[in-house]
Image (tube, rainbow, N blue to C red; front, side, top):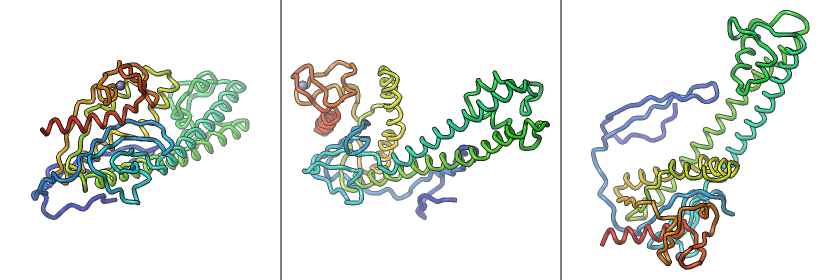
Length: 337
Ligand SMILES: [Zn+2]
């Protein structure tokens, strides 16, 4: 049992939720308590305004998750300077995915690919053996036959794992079966261990990333008097990415899942709310398409997948993320006036 945050003494527990999730073939239980905090912090409104615009892409510094712009220079603790990047004047910068997250997720992906290779080899071996020997009763599904054709069609590990489990208890009779039974059951035992390791690694990577987002959010909330976010739904952006060629769309989707800008945005909103710092949400609709320098709203085509973007109005190139943060700050100012 791991306790993430101590509860203050003066809270009321208003709700408790137990969530059980599966990781490989193990289960993890998480208890979430919702509490009512009795003493609210006094709202903070002094300090610079910061705009944080979510958008993920690969940069020389790593996977960029967000772009930020503040009305005054920010203090960036050295501990977080590799994640919360700032330009020389410390009023603009980007937030990148921690390198350890990328490495751990790459390792988990490699384990998964190795498992795919092992699965395919054992499945093909079983199919070849069945071709030679003829069908057997399926030990895992009563009344069904285990044929080479069927085994050849398996795309998931589950039916092969079911056969392995059944054969561990009751292997088929005959000397010619010894080698294949060994191959299938050894594969199954090894695969379960690597699967667990893979999912543990993935879980650790994601928890570490979310913890980093919470820290970055706290750094920003500690010194800003207002945060401006946009209402872009991460799901909408993901849908739009499906206009791209499939291989590009897959890569973009993978980067988005890894970077989880939605979680960063939620962490920022939560950190500011906890400190009583106001949050302003502006419409995202034209943010990336509108060039702040000339106010041209460019058409919604595929030009935004590359940086910089050429503006139809002034014919100059601009970075749509940087432009978006300028627009967000100016909208926050207009709203306040
Ligand atoms: Zn322009």
